[in-house]
Length: 134
Image 1 (cartoon, one colour):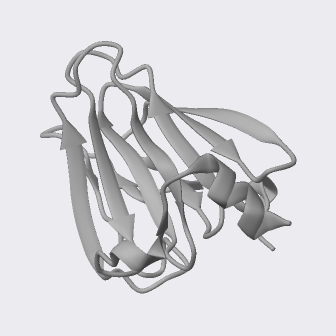
Image 2 (cartoon, helix red, strand yellow; image 1 turned 120 degrees about the vertical axis):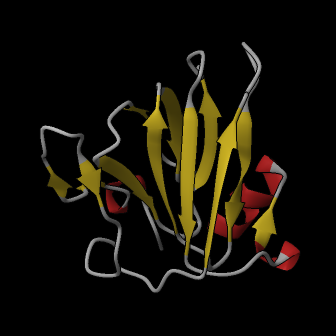
């Protein structure tokens, strides 16, 4: 059973260059095969994203620009992780509730996922999530 201790910050290799830095996310950076990539942007002030868990899918979140908080909950513990570096990402294992909050102006959240979109993989109600953890 996944816990928030299984959710870790991972460094993304950074190639520094006077012309600008470059970072690459490949399968040797994250512990799953990449099946889907999407990003969140233009999130209005005070808005929240996430508010769900996945039965099987794992995700890797990166703040490409700006910052935001990721609130993780495994039904026993809660932890908030602030993402604000484009060369560091948060691995979120399956069966972890996540909420994204406190987006700065201009924040861009990149999500690298272990699977394509499958509605049946989502747990969208917190009480249903708690039931799956008991």
